[in-house]
Figure 1 (cartoon, helix red, strand yellow):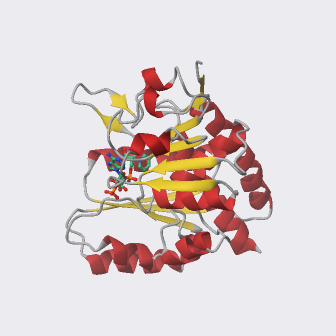
Figure 2 (cartoon, rainbow, N blue to C red):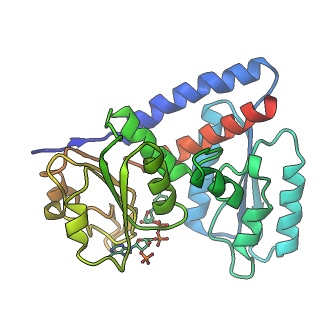
Figure 3 (spheres, rainbow, N blue to C red):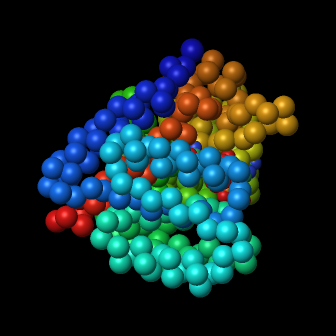
Length: 283
Ligand code: NDP
């Protein structure tokens, strides 16, 4: 079998067009969805991510504020900035780019964002809403992965979904979203015994470990839908996923490439969350 390669860029474009319609409807009512992105310090990769987020907002005609603070910004100054944005009616979404410098408590900062403006979906209130099956703002990467499955028409109900990785930003919320769609869910971690035994039984396999090419074709069930969340830069500069693309494509039914798979969906769902937050505030 040769897998159908999922074109994340094309699907992201389609999804953005759908959300642009919703953003335009709000604008017609005098409400322009607004996103504030805060970056602390000079991390080169973070700067690129923030630039892409601001660009995606512009593409949909959203208002965005890019707030760049120096690396030695105190935690209190950052918290004061968040409080100011929480109270700003032109801002519907607030995102603090991670990682933050070591002297700042990320957990405290993320909890300071008003839950209804938490477009990253990391606030305990949004996490709780997802756990109880009433999601409000969902973490962008797993939300984007779910959208990919929906757009390629993979049925989820009754399927065995295996997620490799249990981070709060990808693995756990992905498991909850699949559970909500009535999949039977298995979560694997670095402590899982005989990983291949589990992955080989997956109708839907989501991999988010940060370990380059760790899932090989022989670990995949023939015909499975494989979503590779990983983004790893090899010493030679090449960008690869957590799935070994060449061997996986011979076995899987669907496969996301890296780059060009889940990546473009993450920013798309951030913009979607911003529009959704603005819609809610307008109600
Ligand atoms: P974390 O490091 O937070 O979590 C990795 C998870 O993988 C952990 O739960 C760990 O298990 C598990 N793991 C590690 N090694 C193994 C192994 N050998 N077998 C089974 N499980 C293992 O990573 P993230 O979730 O933040 O990110 C994962 C990947 O996704 C990274 O490559 C990251 O760059 C990428 N990413 C991509 C995004 C996108 O937009 N496409 C967005 C976010 C992340 P344990 O808990 O036991 O340690």
